[in-house]
Figure 1 (tube, one colour):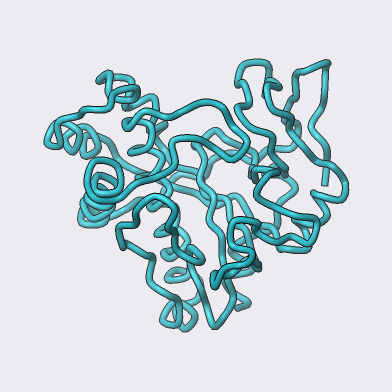
Figure 2 (figure 1 turned 60 degrees about the horizontal axis):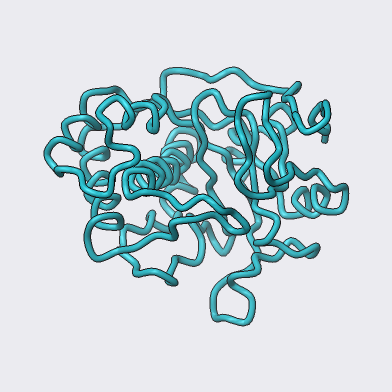
Amino acid sequence: MNKLRQEDNNYHIENSKSFQTGNTFKDETIEKVFEFAYAMTFGDGEHRDHRSGGNIKRKKGQIFINTFQGKLSELAVYLEFFKYNKPAYDKLSKPDFDVYGLGEWDDSDIILDGIKFSIKSTKFYGNLLLLETKDWNNKGEYLPNLNTTKNSIYDYFVLVRMKPDGEKLMISKRFLYSNEIDKEELYSLIKSVNWEYDVPGYITNDDLKTLINNDLILPQRSMLNGKIPMDAENYYIQSGDMRDFQQLVSSL
């Protein structure tokens, strides 16, 4: 696992993977995920407005698009199993579309015969899997779930990249930093583009512990590639250092 190249407070990616086009979602999938993300943002559900250890409070437009792309990413992994391992696909837990209030969350994004997957989403040009340092201990346990009935150990962490850049799309209509958005206008915007994904790789829980023990950390207030400020401190791994997810799917 390679460390980012550091120049003072700037960190630069040097081991990346190009986005692979061709994986798309059906219209009915986009509609279902839209309704879920809208309910979690503007309806009965509620998401945190900040990251663990972060200072920036998100507007509802930001929460909506982050929720939308996050749920699409879970479905992307589901589709990968359908393509490469249909017997395993039939045993997968369905992605959770329950609407939770603040302080409530599901145990794992996807479960297969007791194997727990955590799905992380980023933009199509992203090349880092990021895990907020305040959420994990050196045993690779998820701290918010400790001392609860929820699972605190994830077997695999999968990175999914989404295209287009949802935040840039929201900015085009001045929706991103708004707390009030007309539902029909928002749906029209989401449906105006073709949503694609790729899965550049995954890591194991042991890999996570290696990141932690080797201090692969992107500090809070550092700059990524000289232009992206980091709101919270994160453990990281570059996409070029990640394991091949299709091989994992085929083998399970």
